[in-house]
Amino acid sequence: MNFVFDSDRLAVHFRISQFLYYEARLLDERRWSEWDGLFTEDGVYWAPASPEQPDPDNHVSLIYDTDLLRRVRLARYEHPNAFSLQPFPRSAHLVTNVMIDEYDESTGEIRTNSRFLMCEFRRGVQRFYAGEYVHDLIETNGALKIRSKKATLVNCEGPLESTSLYF
Image 1 (cartoon, helix red, strand yellow):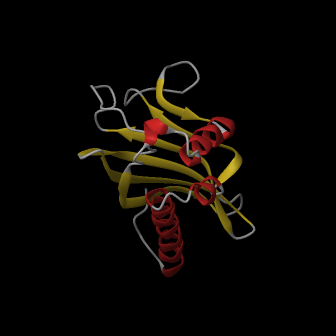
Image 2: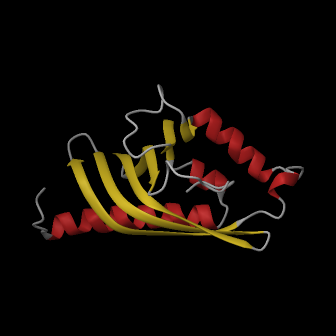
Image 3: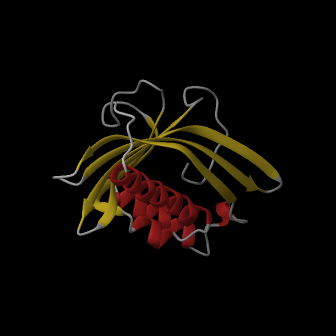
């Protein structure tokens, strides 16, 4: 990995970091439709059940939402009769240590690695989740989209309290 940053590389890093911060903001502000709009049509959200889990297709995951499953979950978030979500949790997603692992300017494909901390507050209880994000992004027509987002919790294979939110 090359850590030499020229002004062009810094501009790309800044743009990608801002995109990841914006995504976190949309989650915290419950702007579900806008957050869903950040994904490509075939975009997936994956939270593996173990740190070394090779894929979501042949192993049980904490979350594996394709486009359809993500839309079903988001529709439930917005439904007034989703009593199990009342009151709706509040969250703060912090994204840090953003690194660009791969960047192919000719195809617009970008792989990022970052760390996160998510605090959730609901019914008088505060919970913390921390881990690593890997985003596979694609840049088309000047816009960034998420092809896949993998959220690996540091304690994903241990006992976890239930959360209704995306990490």
